Length: 60
Image 1 (cartoon, rainbow, N blue to C red):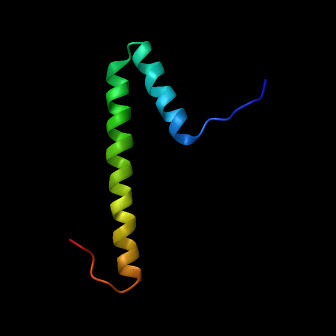
Image 2 (cartoon, helix red, strand yellow; image 1 turned 135 degrees about the horizontal axis):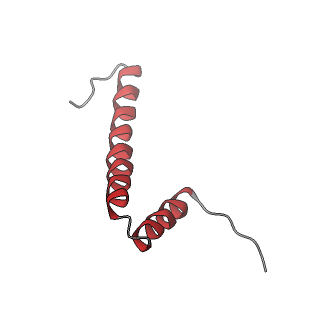
Image 3 (cartoon, helix red, strand yellow; image 1 turned 90 degrees about the horizontal axis):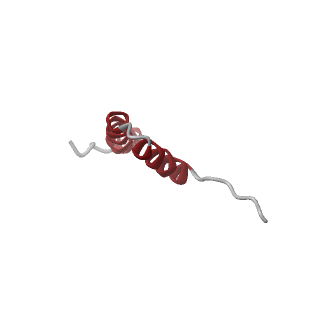
């Protein structure tokens, strides 16, 4: 049987399922919030930095 590897997303989802199955809901909710809110925030920050580097006015 062939081997497989996890992607970042599949590892993230596996950890979420494991936390839910182990009834660690408070950790799960914080992990989800930090991951999604943090990821979206850093994406926007990167877009703003790129605009500044290219001499454009950031969309604020």
